[in-house]
Length: 307
Image 1 (tube, rainbow, N blue to C red):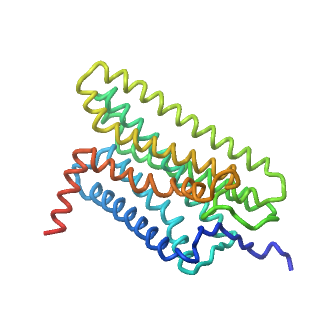
Image 2 (cartoon, one colour):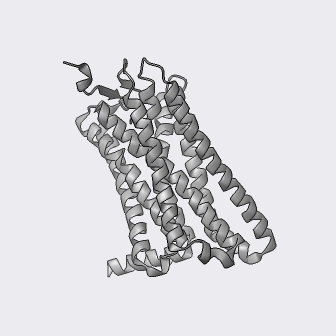
């Protein structure tokens, strides 16, 4: 029988001290997952139900929250399951699916933040054209862009992974990612590297667009007190999200590329998990605290629930 009809089983990194502390780990990660779910579902529901928040900026924020929920489901349920069973293994097809979900979510976060930068640029630099440029159709197309590009990139990436013959079966990480799976192969990975380079260049271009947008925003703020007020209120949480995203993606990339051999294991694990903890937990919170309308509507919904 052809061996290719069987799915390979990969082993994942086992958390240090998991035999003794897995119940503590389970409680902490369950609490983190619950907080991410509550924060992002709550904010999404508030934006959907409150007609006053049916504006492009809040629609894109809602999309960001939905994306965080999507990405969190790629890691937390599987990791919690592993902690309960104290078994850190994953079939190859599930590994590909996990990598697809987690990294399409990260890419979607980047594209959404780019769209949000464009939204703020138009709102502050071209306020009279805001509603004519960001119509319902335009917002719909931008949302399609946010999801389609990551899905296409990751779909091609996973297809390219599946063609590789595997000669190693241990992934030095708590979850699967493309580069860790590529490193298991004993074949040429030139095509995979080329695809990764194309995706990287695309997102570098998006980063350049964000930088250009903020340069124009800063110039516009110098000319108007009203623009400075808008910038402080709406762009600061976006900047925080950008820095948060960039910081965590950078450390995840370093962990994926260079592994745990050059740094202490605890540091390596923390850096690899930052991308799955900080953005989905803190970015929505910053928007709630900083955006007056979101804060007001959120508090109103809390009061209504308590009553």
